[in-house]
Length: 410
Image 1: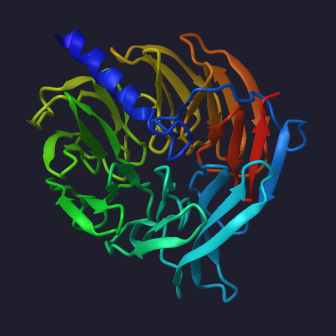
Image 2: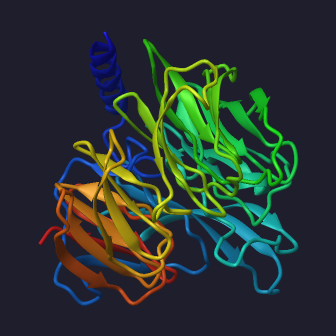
Image 3: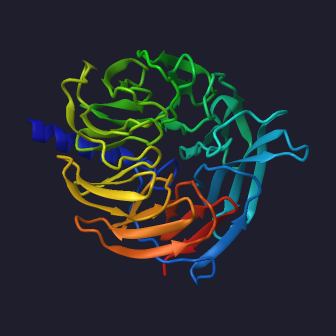
């Protein structure tokens, strides 16, 4: 029966992911960094497979998404007075990189305080086949049509620390995001059609540092679904009605960034700062499951920022210093550990049997998704980046501090 449950839940999850077959959210259609296509392994600023490079004024670390034939992303610009903030959405033509439309959504007279590595537009948009949903944390949330016309916009005020990082998630008519600020940490469920609050669930935890930045993930639970939402010191599971189903304690964890990953009835969660620990937790529990649902854990070279990849029972993760590990996803046994890149914040990408790791200097390292480490390419754009890459239709899209690039398959 246990094996049958895993097979059914995995099949159900894969079917659930086929609703949108394009790169429509943070980490792609699955929310877990996979793309079912061949993308290039080699590129540079002058390589023949550079389709286009579009300079972008402003600073933001959100990832681009695909909206039909447009590349859409959020952006933040400081206005000419040097202190006012403009939060916007930009759409590029997917084929030539030219700006299709650009709309300002929120402006502020003074620049809010954020962490030096963060930006004012770090959360990635979500596209549900009809509408584009953008989120700037406590600075604003909005819904647009595919031509950039605003359908609604609202501000949900809370007290973030270091700025915002949680990307919005849509399921059916529900728009979900976490709001783990200095006080009153919680998770919201909005009506995506009008932005009204359907539910707001307070975290049932007492922590020393409440703030975290993690994007939730909707995964199977029996014949239904659950929202996995890591926060400070606990990862929570909620129903689609906002009811807490279970929670798991990771003592001392806070400022959680990596998005959780789900495979074969197990969710993989990093506990964040100060000493990150990766936990493999069964997702079928009820109540406090800290003592009953842990499969394995490790604190060796675990990421504080980069989200992991699980493929064919292999788990790949990149620590903040660029050290990459390959583990057995079921047992936590280490197959290999190698220093691959430099300082790393972006999440791993998997395509056609290869893992892509982009470090903060703009170098992307391509290695095989296998039990033995085999580096195949190093591609240097020589431009700083913290954004996670996007892949679609045999192309890879990379956002740096200066531009967005599209490279096609060689």
